[in-house]
Length: 384
Ligand code: NZQ
Ligand code: ZN
Image (tube, rainbow, N blue to C red; front, side, top):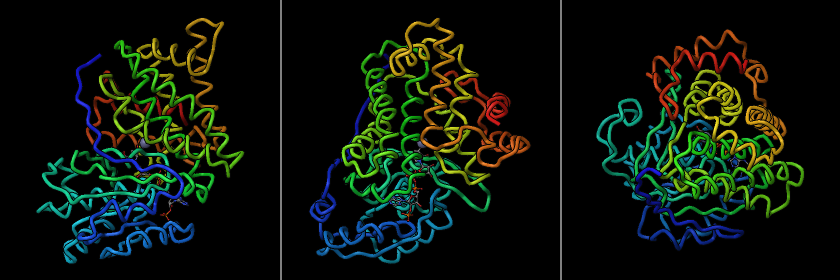
């Protein structure tokens, strides 16, 4: 196992009815910027629960943070926060709202253009305190320091990370996920699954704790994901998916082990150019990437096939074949197509995606830094 440092400062408040606690978690001396998305929280009652809990607080609202949040929208929130002397942010929504709130938290304290934090890697030296109410289990952003922001004008989607933007408190009430459309339920399961795979399906460094945690999350998502579609009002199913998604990207399973993240890097280019949901892009890339990297990932692929899918009496090569097939079939079972054509994207779009990777200097991604834009081209061609 590699050396590591692990710290996750986010306080998780989990369970039915727990949104009512947020007012106690935030000092009522703060002027809170309440950030949310396109209005789902007004339809499902979450907004009212938050307002009721924050009745002692001064609140300013910023709504309209869109899926794949844009710097264009978030710059307006930064301006508003500065004008109103905001000193605390509460994000209420899915990954997009929470990621957007992280950029606002950092951007308010940054002297220059907040896009520099993404495009130039400008260091985040200070950020407003931030908490969140999660409404869509998927990204893990509720208890990590990552954020992914899009610049619509140049069709770029870039990540940044800082320990200063971990949410202080994250409220996870599984019952708020009942109002999710099926597509977003499925997206969440696929995203959490692929987060786990990015930290697990690499090469062996003799880290059985991390491996077994990861396998537990994968098995849970495989068992519970389809139930969320077939038995949508089952609270326990929603709770297990919500906790699995948080655990998949709160840093725990990734400590001391190699990590891949090539599926995400390629996927972000697909969203940037073609607007697909984040998880849809992952479902396209991962099975093909597993096939292309089957030799270097062989030991882990066999372990994954045998332990997670229970494939027994087969040769190692057969286990790998079946493991890849079953992974793609699982995504399809969740209603998430695994080919570009499933989203109406023709093979001639691949040139543009490869060019974007060149532009973003993605020349050495994956756990062995051996995926460059030309390798990505082959992965995408086999996913056409
Ligand atoms: O905007 P509203 O009206 O709230 O509607 C949203 C949105 O349309 C809706 N929704 C959310 N909760 C709901 C609900 N509808 C009904 N009931 C609810 N309870 O769902 C739609 C999608 O929301 P979004 O926040 O975009 O989805 P998700 O949570 O999947 O976030 C995706 C974003 O997170 C980034 C992705 O790249 C993408 O931009 N990621 C962030 C990561 C991180 N910070 O660690 C890691 C991930 O790999 C990912 O890249
Ligand atoms: Zn993801």
